[in-house]
Length: 387
Image (cartoon, rainbow, N blue to C red; front, side, top):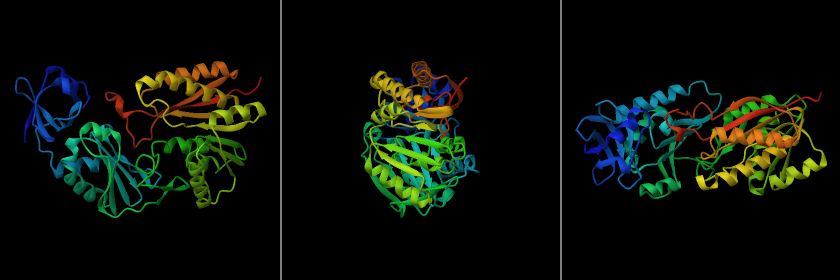
């Protein structure tokens, strides 16, 4: 195994709990990607890591101890990941959350009997077959699909591609989340086939609806929140700009025998203003938009967008109603998100109580020393009853 040598500053990042070492702190390394032994400038052993010579992130720490990173190592780590997911009330969940599980650049989601994985670094790509063997041993899937169609691979000098790696994987998989069923799309759906990081927040939103109440799911997409809301509500409105997404939502409603969801195709910003003017009110409103900020340069404009849609949603709450709101924009930090909500509440003319702070589902662990592992933030706000 080849060696890579890093500066004292690079070594200090590992000491502080972050697994990445950047190009500027690498003093030397092999020409090709793969597993390497990492040493400091005095030759002292620091660990074993994934090496990506074309990437700004040159090294990703796997093992700080002086021990082999072989199939047995991968199998043991994957078993630990699986054990941390025991008890999840669903048939779809994230088995490996990359750096959050100590396995940088590796994402693995389970959809019933199938796995969908992403190999996000050149170093990890070099040990692909070993990792796949370990996944088969630990999870026993009917098939493994690689959804390596993500832009981050370009920065590693890797192709964007969707590849069937083992067995067979269907294009649609029926999965269960609590009492709700929906169809995941491993080959061509968002992320690896579905949005799994909001599972616990969807279950919570469903429980917030008063029996016989009304609910609104903004940016409904395939209706994941709407399906949970419909379990207790008399009527749910699912709003999205995409006709194709709403059609999939209707399929999901039929799959669950739900006839109390109205599917509305419209721009959320315009429709919320129209409903406000018409005096519409809902007992629960969910605001779960796509990422408005794709990069740091977009944060200011994104914050204005989040402010506007949350302001309109706040004004649609019935007295005592709950707003479940979230942002998946990594570059919009939690403090700025909460500050935006405070500003929107002040502008709304409503008194709103912060009931709880929301985050990612437990199978998407966020490490305090690795901020990149956390991107989803949210809150539940409660409209005060009239005096």
